[in-house]
Length: 151
Image 1 (cartoon, helix red, strand yellow):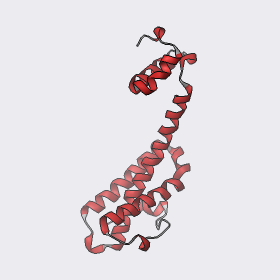
Image 2 (tube, rainbow, N blue to C red):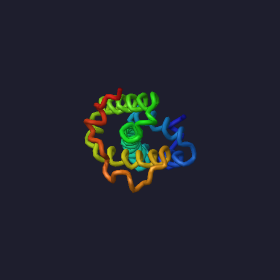
Image 3 (tube, rainbow, N blue to C red):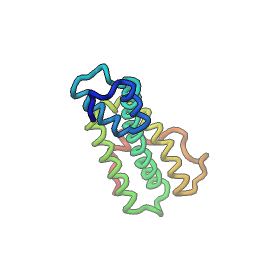
Image 4 (cartoon, helix red, strand yellow):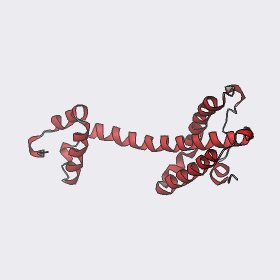
């Protein structure tokens, strides 16, 4: 892109017209330190969205982990190797994400709460369990869920 031919309004308009071009343009603008052309409002919005996305990823991993732990504990006749694999994979991915982004630990309570809510939806779909029979609060602590070994 020829930055010299673009003004701030044209750059801001890219956000809705061609998002990928908006991103690449902003990478160039930031590298060139052309602060006066930066679309600050949309940039803040996108950075905020990126942060929320990381929390959602963590919550999703917790949801899968909690659902399979709960099924393991309450549906022993249906236990399978795939449940073990899912539990181990989720534990590893949660640990990887928290090691890579340690500040996410400050959002653990939120991610666990959202994860349990997601787990309940999985459990209802997978087991046909009555929603009212599921605990309102997550029955697993972070330490238990992340360190539990299934054999």
